Image 1 (tube, helix red, strand yellow):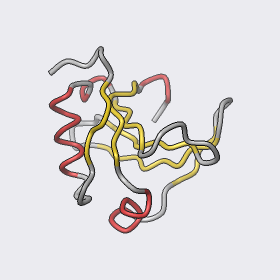
Image 2: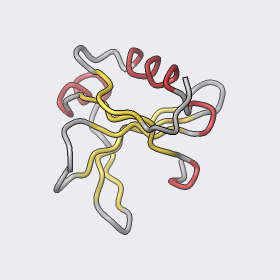
Image 3: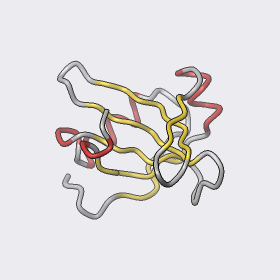
Image 4: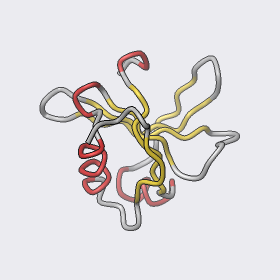
Length: 100
């Protein structure tokens, strides 16, 4: 997954421990800005999404959900959060550019 192919869609209130319990340990990625905990997924249709959280100094609780073009909608965000299958996971902020 290339960062230039994804856009942030929503902020998800979910604990890292809950994600790890369900999906295993996150990968750690680095870019010019920070180190990130990453949980990356792909759909059967070839789209992808990733949950990201800064390792050292996260600016907000939870994770940012970034998606590829075909998943850039609020409907897709709701579906993704439900399918994470993590109790209590919920969307707290949305990208104003997202469409329903």
